[in-house]
Image 1 (cartoon, rainbow, N blue to C red):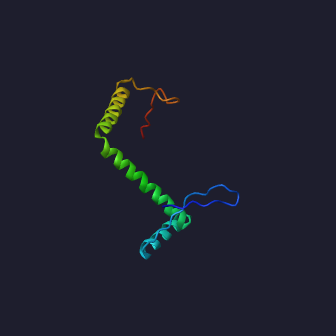
Image 2 (cartoon, rainbow, N blue to C red; image 1 turned 60 degrees about the vertical axis):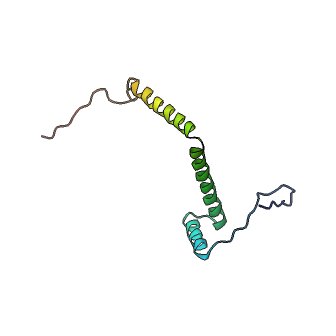
Amino acid sequence: MATRQTSSSGKSKSPRIQVVLPEELCQKLAEFADAESRTVSNMAKVLIQQGVERLQQAQASQASPVQAGFQAELFRQGLEASQAQKPQRLRGAPRRVRLHRPD
């Protein structure tokens, strides 16, 4: 379980965890952190956040295929509705296109 510390002002700090990594993984993490000008700790946080988001997305798509189908149907209907509309002229676009013919 993550431990929560308190600062000298009495406010609680973010929870902290401790992780043991193999040497190779730790080296790769340090290289990624250096490439993005981050600390190793911050890089680990970013990668964990990305991993958690991917897992949540995967669980959401597996948990409710009906909902995913509904979202796909709404997206398709939106595309069809936009295609049915008359194309609009871009602002500032020339009304007449002149072709340059080389002599």
